[in-house]
Image 1 (cartoon, rainbow, N blue to C red):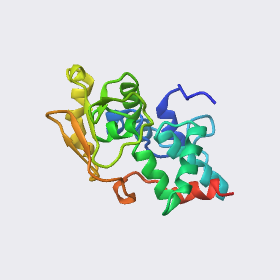
Image 2: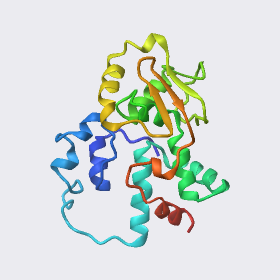
Image 3: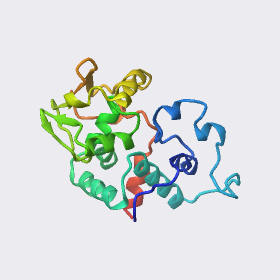
Length: 208
């Protein structure tokens, strides 16, 4: 299945929660979910009771769309999380958080994960001084993610840094805004992820 290219605010309305796909717009009154808090389409305002499977499927779709992944990619992360020690659901979220495009977004260097993915693909970021253009690259503890010098005058990045104070930087990383450098202090833990995600539903869906 190809990547979704339609209006992303529609996805938030489908899932009934903010996926923060439009960056700063999601924090304002212009957010589509704030104005129309119901599913899109002719029958969007109807109340329907979902089955257990329906709840599990919607939760999986929500997480997948939040991090901008295709089904095959998401299944790959789940399989890797299963092989790791610990709780599978928490392992899964930890892997997703360690993606380079997500790290760039969490540091506040980009407005959204979509923008972060594009910037990484175009080679704007360095990891430990080496250029990395793979959005799925998994960062490790004590690594440094830095914006390359030629890209520091980018207006979108500068605007994103100014507005990032609203979101804040997770405890497992630190940001030196003056030098456009983020440091991975520790691997992400479940309590470091603020979004409302019921990862156990995803585990139940894939365990069938």
